[in-house]
Length: 273
Image (cartoon, one colour):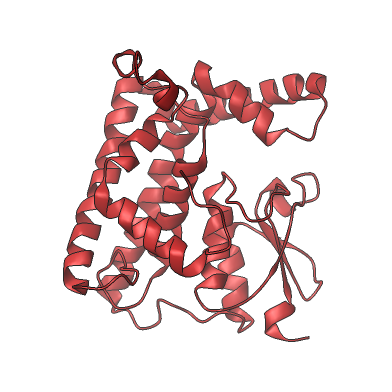
């Protein structure tokens, strides 16, 4: 069996040709596509997933592996994908790791608050995540998920902040990445090839996450409804749009970064509107 047909990626949803909402799924898909490794997509289930986490993969029919970082480590160890950070200097590796931590350990928590602890969004998240379950099951399990997220974010500290403070911290992170991408695009010069967050000629692991988080925001409808002043004549355009989506759409370098990566590596996927 060749390396080109060894992998099944369990994405949590059966929606071929579409991005799914969890960013760590897209991270794995981009990691495979960027090195030309094909894979089979399947829905899978958190009930059978290791650690109860989506995504997870099966390699050569072996026991599945979950957690996106451990998945990448496994694929690298098995020689399925190269170590795309191998050529980085120690300082660049530290920079890359810091950017990934900002996404995984900060932005992810702020997005979880926005999606699960905001009244306008929790029902959308519940019905999307549990779409295969009967309605009574969605109600009960959705309540349990909501409580679990609430307890976790309170213990970690995020939900002890005000909504305005969380929104400000979220915006700060997105603007920081916008600044990095403006400089990366400037270094690249003319052309329409993808540019990368560290400003080099090749992507790093941080790019896998940054694109994944960007795509997740652009396709996810379960976020804070836009503020009242945006309603009125434009209500049909803006109603139900995510607050994070509004932020990202207002950052031109991030949008161009996402469009170029999508066009190069996901031409078979429906792009966000």
